[in-house]
Length: 192
DNA sequence: GTCGAGATTATCT
DNA sequence: GATAATCTCGACC
Figure 1 (cartoon, rainbow, N blue to C red):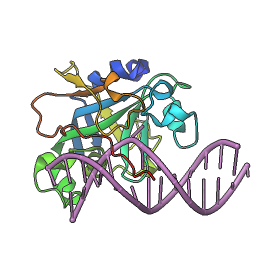
Figure 2 (cartoon, rainbow, N blue to C red):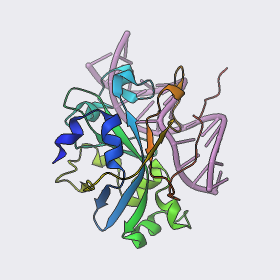
Figure 3 (spheres, rainbow, N blue to C red):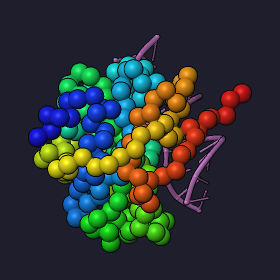
Figure 4 (spheres, rainbow, N blue to C red):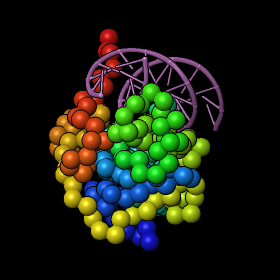
């Protein structure tokens, strides 16, 4: 079923729009994702090379890859040995909203429950421990939509493009969704 | 010297 | 006030 995840992230990303991620009683319909092409992508963690940190991204497709501090959920794609993944940026809670709302006490509006990578992960209850989870049989489940949803593409958000992020319009979202976050410039660190 | 884990600062709501 | 595929420093090989 997940054979199609073996394709490039830029082709898989649009397919994930409208897909449902289910963790326990909470389910979220994806409305915004970003494609990461691993070693050829300056914004990817795998750009610097393989490491234990991103080992999952080099693994087989259909698995969950999470990133530290704020817990960002990613879906690994491309065959094993090739670093590539899709960041789940935002989504809409369709089931278990009570539980999701309780986890995200800081968010008042339903649209805010999953309006960001970290929020999406927390609302679903995804933790760093879930890295490497099989999305087909693990605690975190991914249900691909029967048909591809309408989508738009543009520059990625929050990615520190080394040399020019504009050349990588690998951000995909469903138009008209309130849960889709606005454009956010890459956070630049203070430099002495 | 390289990898990993956690922290900092800028931007957004 | 909260969040963000960053960045720097500490630990281990």
